[in-house]
Amino acid sequence: MSIRIFNTLGRRVEEFTPTEPPIVKAYFCGPTVYDKTHIGHVRSYTAFDFIKRYLVLRGYTVIHVQNITDIDDKIINRARKEGISWRDVADRYAREYLDVLKRLKIVVNIHPRVSDHIEEIIKFTEKLIEKGHAYVAPSGSVYLDITTIPNYGELSGRLSSDEWRQEEEFLREKRHPFDFAVWKAAKPGEPWWESPWGRGRPGWHTECVVMSSKYLGSSFDIHGGGQDLVFPHHENELALAKAYFGASRRWVRYWVHVGYLTVRGEKMSKSLGNVVYADEALNKWGCEVVRLWIFSAHYRKQLEFSEDILNSFKDVLERIRRAASLSLRLATELEPSTKLSEEELRVLAELNDIEKRFHESMSNDFNTPEALQQIMRLNKVVNSRIITARNAALALKALSIYEQFNKVTATLDDIFRESDARLRDLLYKAIDLIISVRSELRKRRLYDLSDWIRSELVKLGVKVMDYKDRSEWVLEL
Image (tube, rainbow, N blue to C red; front, side, top):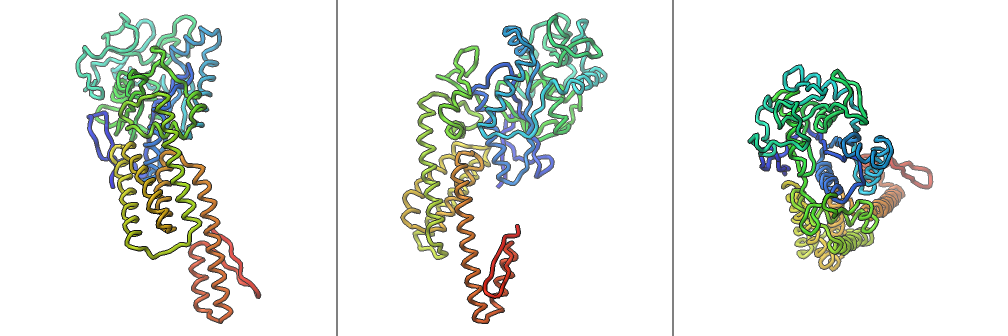
């Protein structure tokens, strides 16, 4: 079953074929650390975590790079307001952001910070000037000449220069009003680094191109972020990559953008004063409820926040937990049987259909709400038909589907820690039983059969030691 993914570049669903399978190289835009992480950020990071986890479930190895922008106008302004250094502001909120990720069970492989990559950014800028795509203004700022970039606007669909207004102040020193800063000359009182053009600091768009390419190469698989980053940020990143690597190179194969989080129909933002901070939400509802709520909406669609909605997902999670726990109990406590009645065969067929549809949903542009519907359907099967059948094989099959769901959502981790322990105990008891049967065969001098059992156990990683009055075993895994 192939995985299909919506590519913002081209605005169509495409089959997912990474450059170097089974490796998937992915870059997701992280925070500008000037304030606490809010629940809108959490939605983006967690939605991408579901994508990454499903790719891992399907056998891929994902290298996930997520930047920390630790030098920016907002950081400088916050530092001035509080009378502290910009580094203190950045370090404080970077620690807070990393703590939020840890609480959300989100693992990022590489977390580059802009201030650690100034040398690479300067060299990148020099190359753009050398190639004729960038120019040095009298102030010492460096701008990208957008008119030298073929098909500028193709990512966002803004194909007219009338739509290319950049979210930065208009400066007369630009050749064109829509050109953007690759390197910014330092203003009085701002942090700076020495460069061939004088003291300054990186432009916002430059940093992500340089850091993503440093860790993932000149061509990688997924570049993601919130939908608000399509223009100008990602459009300008793509322009910089074309200028540096050449317009013919496919710098990013798939552009993935996560929808807005809304409050009473409006996008959550600090300017509207409707922000809910991540630590407050996690303290009130917990990681698992927050993650399940985010899973309930397709990553490209808007997700509405309200306390009533989050409270409702407490109940949804509890129903899933009860059914998964029941599956675990039945799988480990009932006697195993390989014979299924006609009704049990019908239950097994439905379980197989649920599993199939779960993967079909996730493979179809990571359609998490449809995947969640299959888990709710699974709950009904467990609570009515499997509990009645009381067949360990059916319960184990249901448990395996919950486990796949959990590998994507991380909402049932404690149950599967218990599952691992209980299933391990069941395995050990089964081996003890086999060893007892083998000892009885040896007493009856049926050595051919006892030797065959021993050789089969060895293939499974179970070493058997025979002594005069007993046999013992150890795992050799």
